[in-house]
Length: 229
Length: 209
Image: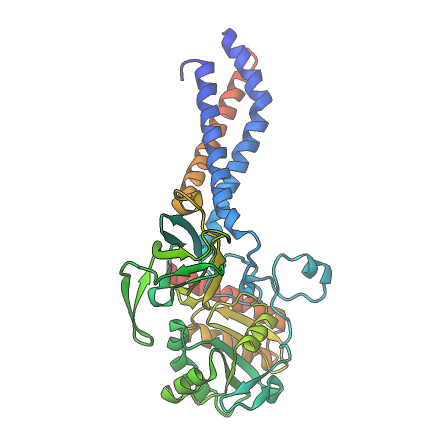
């Protein structure tokens, strides 16, 4: 630019463009979100020692401990999560209408077979109509326990911080009932094996809970980076 | 020479304000990138909030156009809606709606769910309607839809009551949400670059002769 006046005008135009575009994007992006709860799967780490921080959090958090709940099993019998007390749990939330959930079933069956006889249980929680779940479980020969619920299953999902649930999601706990990981989306074998190896380390007291949680978070992110890279 | 002396102090005086504007613009621009991060793997220690809420993944709005209601969904990149899960029903008591006319979707075959038609980016349903009491009640419709993310996540069916707007297409319908992200980022980046140049030049002019 030849003169300061022109230079200033040019800069001012670019500044205005930047501000206008930013504000426009901000408005378009934010306006429809008003009042929409953020799903809890991405919430902060459990931190019961700082209740004020939790109260100030904009969205629900994942609980530190396995919450108490009870749902009907495939036969209609009420079943409490306490039934598996003392075991590590892989709690898989799913539905028959959800394609990635259906794709996970062979993996979960395989994990159930691999860990049979050890202190780990796979439990499915179907957020669906009981007749559909029973038919699907029979068709796919699901051998691990499956609990079923509609609103009551949504309530259980909310206890895990998933107030606006998206499926599938899978909760991993250690044998003391500490929530070690909450995995949102379709689970694959490498991730499942990795998380379970950390749960095993935790159960064998080779690592402490904070280290296990951190290792899982970092390990999964490294896997994601490798996958996307 | 005089111009140089005049412009240097002026730039020095206003530079912090410019940088502030640039920072705001750039921050607003980059705020949207959080939505583009991978979200499908998380441990409990993760502190990320880049999960698309269903109402952001699938934005719905409707407008009245003659004797039809046009319901449009704007679908975020990487997400899709199932054609057969879309329903539009009357909500207000005097309203009668017909079956929604939907365009053919993209055929998606999943070995575990079979073949389905899905919509990506956006879709519009055209729904004929009539009013029994000639307008004593505001038009309200109830829409149901269900969709998933390509990366392996599905949302339960969503049901919403929508108030169609009258007349031509509303801004929310006609403006796709994501191009602004690019504009904002580029605008912010240009602003930063220029701010740097201005500050550098200002410093040079500041050197006493």
